[in-house]
Figure 1 (cartoon, rainbow, N blue to C red):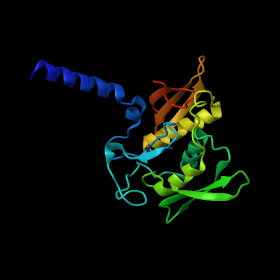
Figure 2: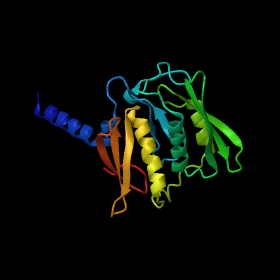
Figure 3: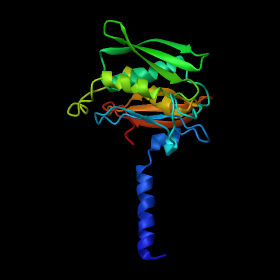
Figure 4: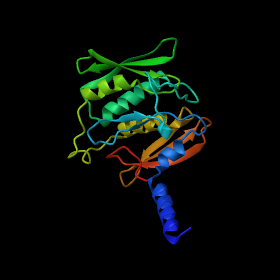
Length: 216
């Protein structure tokens, strides 16, 4: 192997280790449980929904619904929707009634406007925890686009940070992990503890109160 080839391989390995997201790696459930993820990158085009590994699926929830270790609950579905609305500052929308339909295979979340009128419905596949893509696109169209100028000026409250951290764990935990304690630090960030079902600490992550995301 030439010296140039060795340098290229070394550079690739270094780049890969830098790009790998610590939180997503720590919360990966392993095995065949690979829940969908949401990348709401604040670029103005809305969150993107997909699966780990680059698999392409067809149909309402995908040709092969990826299973969580436990089905998504109605409370978790509400948290996911509320967190999406919060991130996009959709103050004129809120989650309404949440229920199981289709023999408990689907979770249906209604969206309400400021007057309490039903304006849309978002459904999740209970086994995989993934939302219906078409309905999610419709929901994003109703939400305001992120303001690039003000995105680093907002400050989430402790209650809002708890909601965002909960949604993060639900998305990446695959039904195996839960949010433990979350508390503010002297420097204005938040430390969130992630535990397994037995209550053992799996990870602690430091979150920015500006972005609601891990800072390291």
